[in-house]
Amino acid sequence: MKYNLKMKSLLFDYGGTLDADGTTWIERFRPIYKEAGFDVARDRFDRAFYDSDDRLPVRHALKGLDLAQTVRLQVEDVLKALDIRAEPRLVDPIAERFVADCRGQFKRLVPALERLAGRYRLGIVSNFYGNLDGILAAEGLRSLFSVVADSGVLGVAKPEAGIFLYAAAGVSASPADCVMVGDSIARDMRGAAGVGMKRALIAASGEAPDVGQDWTVRSVAELEGALE
Image (cartoon, rainbow, N blue to C red; front, side):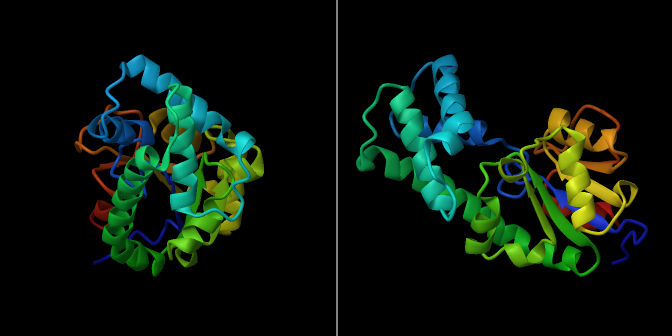
């Protein structure tokens, strides 16, 4: 297979891109909560989820926590926001199911990521809690990436230019030589466009609005063919 060697780096979003094929955390969590017996109104669940997600690094010391520990705290806080006592028998099935789905995706994508890492410098650009570097290390993924730009560490978040420029510098490439791969039009596609990066949009259905992206793929696993 031939690769486009004019591009030096591929920069990936994390949530919804590397841990799922174009599906956000909240979209993945809703059916898991419902299956666990928490069939609450969507707007109420969404408020609880975003309250947990936005304030997780403020409420908890996350440094050194792995994916399972981080997700467990996120679930606990959602249940508390729903006025439900966050007991282990309620929290564990939800957190464990979510983490298992993430790890299944990692296992599926690693062969493709390893091949891409042989041709391009890889990096991550993510709006995360500040402990993504450690999570990637614990999951055996960190060695694939030259840089991890975590908004919780840098204090700047997508779609702001600074986080993309930090990642480009971390892979020793100009923005024009980078491809941003992500599932969010507002954060990934428009943010990357603002600094002159090429863009690959992850869309689970394979269909997406044209917002100027250079490629639309259903999964990171399809990038090899798209970049051929």
